[in-house]
Length: 98
Image: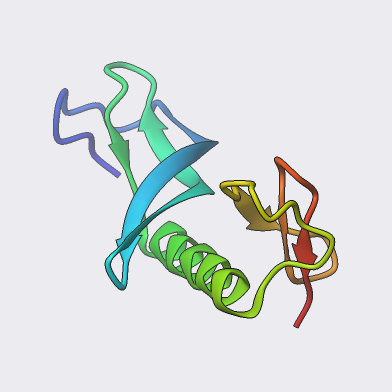
C-alpha cells in the first residue's frame, strides 16, 4: 500500500474507527477496521475492509428493520458485530442474532 498523501510505503496500522455511512437514505454510524498511515494520518479502506464495512452497515439495517432484542427504544443504536455472530448495540446492549 502507498499513502496518497505522503508517499509512505511501509508505516501503516489498522484500527477500529467509527465511520458514518449512508445506506438507503439513512446515515448510520458503524465501528469498522480502517488502515491509517502512521506518517500523516491518511485513512483508507482496502477491499476486505470495504466488504466488512458493507456487512456491518447491512447488519445495522437489519437490526433497524427487525428490531434489537432487549433494546432501549429511545437509544440511537451504535451497532457492532457480536461474538458468535449477530450484532449488538454498545450503548443499550440490545442484540440481534441470525
